[in-house]
Image (cartoon, rainbow, N blue to C red; front, top):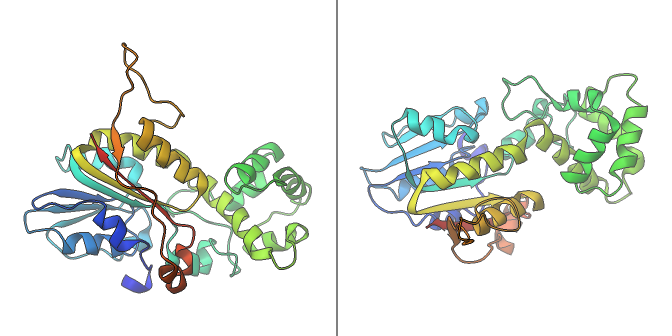
Length: 299
């Protein structure tokens, strides 16, 4: 699959943020098409090691033949578990690109895209059983409203949820059926934007993306050695807010945890400010338009 699978976003910036050193160990938590991993490998010497994680069977077909590279076919929420399995306690840098790959969007049977008719799937890990179809057909009105508001940032989430529940006597099974059902909520000229938010909300719920991100970030406090770098690309305001708070406070609240003497416990210091794609990158890769990169160093 290779480069046709996915065009990496903020490639040079995110890898530069790792401040790669010789004879070190790094992690690409979201392997995908392998673009970020290949760039990291280009900067590693023969005594270094790169671990990559990806739960998607399609992405696993892009594995790199390199003695310094180990692909782990699992979700990055198992970061610490599998590093321990490989007898690695700490690493020197971790990169995570939280976006959906172009391949996933462009494969109709995966159900990620508003452009194609396909099953309401949206699973990153095709071994799991819970799909977008299950959510739409079994969640309560309150549950649907919450995910559309929280993950899709849709102000009329209650009306959308009510309409779905009132019209699912016949099971909703395909993306086209879903698009048609929600047509009354799609203002002319803005249909794709609103649908994209609905799909995003469903995808994030199917894959429990917020919970997974929080679990992963908390493990980074232990897995990253002092001076190690964390480089995270996010595409959703909720995810970016979680990354920002984690870097600032070591948790996902507005205030850091304090020790017995009232001193804040600091785990990271930010490296530079927020980075976004250049106009030229967005012109060449429209899917980069909402990307935000934050880099931090373990202290």
